[in-house]
Amino acid sequence: AVTGEHSLPVLDTAHIRPYADGGSHDIDNGLPLRVDLHRLFDRGYVTFDEEQRLVVSRRLQEEFENGKTYYAMAGQLLRRSSEAQPAAALAWHRDHVFEQR
Image (cartoon, rainbow, N blue to C red; front, side, top):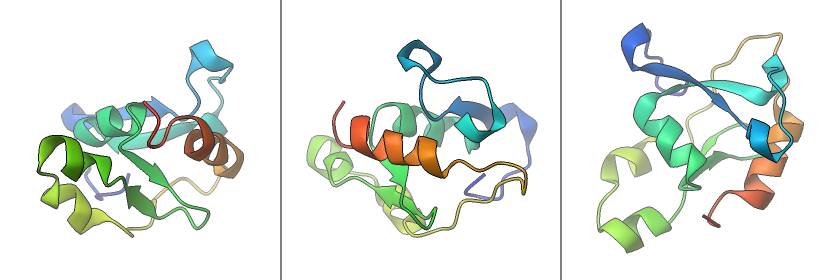
């Protein structure tokens, strides 16, 4: 998770590449995200760069005139399992979802 949150009721496992778009249920295609970040991730408002740091789209501010909570998180390193290798799936997300939906 990005935020370090451990309260299970607010955590989801997000598919990086949706199953409907050819993604798998493999650990390399999943991220533990807080529910709000999961929604923003699925809708292309946030992603992770090549160093696996959180990137927040300017669309959040442009479309909703808000998002300061999320902009404050920008640059935070993704905390993940040492077994997961999500780099390829995150590259797909940046190219096909981020700032496009």
